[in-house]
Length: 607
Image (cartoon, rainbow, N blue to C red; front, side, top):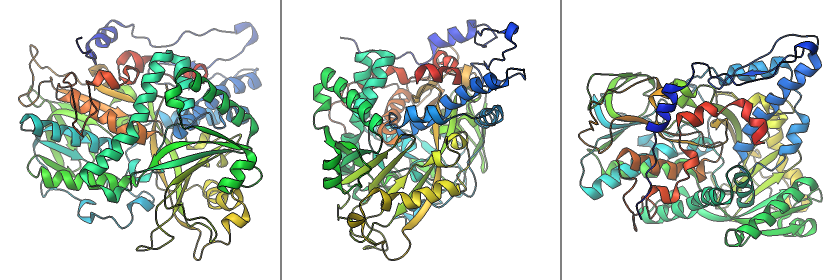
């Protein structure tokens, strides 16, 4: 059977070229009642409203869009989005002013802040030589330039370099990073390799049917064993990649009931993927895991965790050692613009803070910040700021040695928690930290304030205060014990994630209709060093689920860049077995048609 090849560009380019100039969605008017409407354009996701005598109804309509915007963000951020999603709908009643502020933020892209908060993950780096690594002079040309040095950038570089080595193809790959190495979302996240199978299957089944839902779920689930195997094969022990038992503990009975029903559907449709998932009643979860009496029950299953910054920097150290001539990383090199040249072999000219570099291919791996360089994604790919902390466990807290992660699931919010291996402060001041994130709803009662926030330079006091106190009151006092010596909170920071209007990653070849940069490659002319015509590519918008989407999305893009997505793989550690279409969900492809349909207006329907 011939392997399927994705058409990443041509069909939707024809759609783009023949489309009407107007992208406005149809809407009904209510002139007799003077009822205003929300005007949502597919191109910008902008909401405008008219002042009328029906102000309460107008506020309600704008609030509906605002509510679904934040819920889409929290939904995506948490990945286990059934946690409190209906509760969030009930509490969001933002005014026109708040909704307008939100839309203004998400449609005005900004570059990463020069002075971000200090993440625990980036402290005491094991490869200090990489933190500010750069060449004396920026190279003038590369075959492939990757923008962004996080998990996605590492995946793309690792796959391309190893694939080209295996086939004997010379290649020059350069990573450009605007700040220090891995200083974006990967270096600031919660460290989970976690997917909630019953939730993901249910929501994708509702949207795309059972077969597509299964493939998407299997794509998520594939990441944990893939990353753990890669860690073993490459000797990346410093990344702490490991299996854990995850405990989703519920303080809201209705959320528990909804999750149980979703699990029933998964067990009925895909019993092999539901194997090992266990439902615990309130008394059992309180006794087994030490939770307080406010918890109604829990669902447990196998998940994963890692130290993301150390995992990625270990990958880079290995690549630089193995490919000293073929690979380089340039930190402190902010890409400010991309232009097209007349050179058909290297048509892309990247203007950076350290000079210019040309390339045959450009890969955008900067999450929400990709919108700065891809105009067609403005308002379609936007940020959500998350808060994270590293905390010392109480003196009586059991020694789990990094084998458990938790979620505290309430009616309005959800905290995601894992614990590092080791004993408290045992090794160079590190050990057994409880990594705790979430709490965004405590900023303004809705979480709306954190959507569209491009800067990771500060901590919001209400969220920080909540995270600092949530653990001792969630566990029984006898289970937690007295607070540890020294401050409970060792570190607290923020990070910026990329959200999309349809809650799915944007992966693949970027159409000129999105970049606004058309490459004249002649008559099917290809580059000297690859089998694919020059192009820009993207892997971004992972909606807070980066550790179960980024790596293999990067693999898919890398193989597409090399024109090897249809080459069967069998046993190589840098890519899954089979061809790309066997394991990569086509729903994630970044086509102009999908982007054009993607709109804030769609969020109510998706929710």
